[in-house]
Length: 310
Image 1: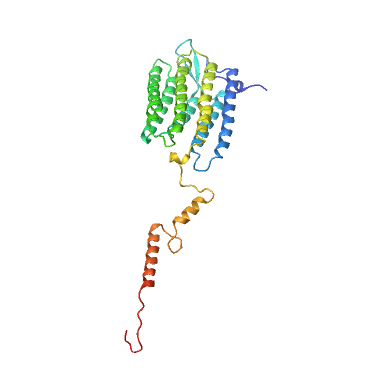
Image 2: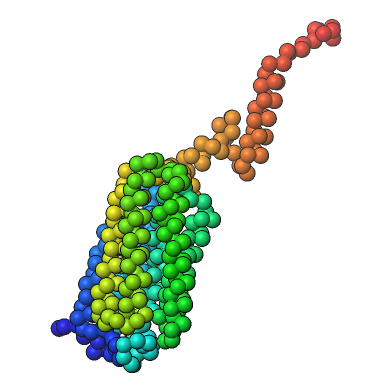
């Protein structure tokens, strides 16, 4: 049985996905699915409280797998009139923008958490990533030349992201040490180069209708593989020897093999060896009782003679 996706879900536009394009998308989905199982298994090799970077990767890969399952099934697209090179409509894949809306900010968060950037800088950079994706979606849905206005706004947001990744973040102090800074520089340059190719692919496909929908899928599929599984595997591998405590991202709200319970019991015991209740106030009371008992033990004993004299 061959690929029947386009028979079950017929294309809804003049310029649409081909069966070969659907086959390629199923391949990309398989790559994302396999990567998801590998990273999930890798996550369980990490101690609890030190899995944040791996769990972010799981979210990114899961989102990509769902997106490519939809596109391979010829679902998640809407027809939009083309502006250049012919007449008719072209499939605009909004499900891909949903994927990018979730995964792109998380990829940046994965990188920036390893730097010394302030929380406000990280927040602004993630917001610019959202602006980049949203303006791309709006531009793709606009059939007139006004789409290029949104395209320009997206490029401005991308310039800010490049500035943070390549200029601002490398100048901060890395908690993990200078050894990881070299790894960050390599991964940030790699991701920045891929981000240069995304707007170019958009302009030639959904923007100007120069390449076919199948060619668009091949181009974006390769980019998503490189920016998703390949990037995340490399980044997590670079983190394997880094002390996770240096990032200050551990949570104190978990109990691992009873360690948390033992520490809690050790820190809530009074001087008399009795468990403290209601926190530090009762510990203070217990200490006061202990001090009073010590004073009574050292006080001189007064006795009286049979005649009543001292």
